[in-house]
Length: 358
Image (tube, rainbow, N blue to C red; front, side, top):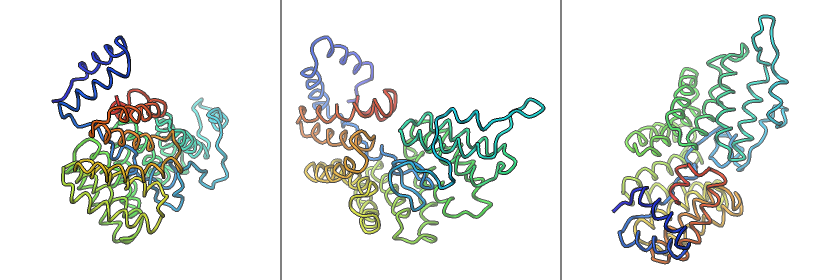
């Protein structure tokens, strides 16, 4: 049985009036008695999305795999948003003239805001950068830097669950990369389109795009490359969502073997795969193994990403799910509230990930 949001809202109001945690614990017991499966966030951390090494918390295409926003080596330090006016002049006709460096400045600001987990601002600046590249005579609509900005905007829109905007950005980027024969960049775009469809539950389309990415990556990069592993991981996630747990485990372990060998056991990508294997065990009712893999993931995420990162919150949420399933409601509440505090601060109260914890 699935409670409506109205029922839940009514209950929460009653909780506030009648007195806190004891009522919430009763609600967890009620939900468990109705056998409603808690929401598990196997892929809420966006490790399925990929860029050129510019964004925080995602698998990258370049050699900058550290989870931090960095300058791209062009000599421009990050600055406050006020810098934009300094890079705009007015020509004789009264129209704004875009300084040649302005598109990159906007892009860098998108990176700063993405690194701060402000996905709304990041999306705005990335989209602005793409438009500026389009209108800048030195670049134009088909320039590769514009495709880069479009891809980054797509990532931010995906984080905001604005999926049609994300698809539009990715398809524009694909139209730039395709005639130029940029195979690895095309694979990146195919992967990211697959991720959007996966998040929307369109699993057939997701697999179609993931396998398009995989065909390029195995051929161009090889079967032991981290980007190939990323696609293995994402394919596994689709199989999991379809209830094909054996296939999911098979593809997750293929990814894990590469991550541990190429990036080490303390890398966020390794943690993401630990997390996803735990989800499979949880779904199979093997709660001991699920907790074992979740805590392996958590140790890495707290150390590398910090305790206030959405990926860390996703693992807190998933640990709560296991305790909830075991009927240990005190521990479940403890971990749910840890997750909720981070999500509300980093993602906002209206984000779908936050809603799963409510």
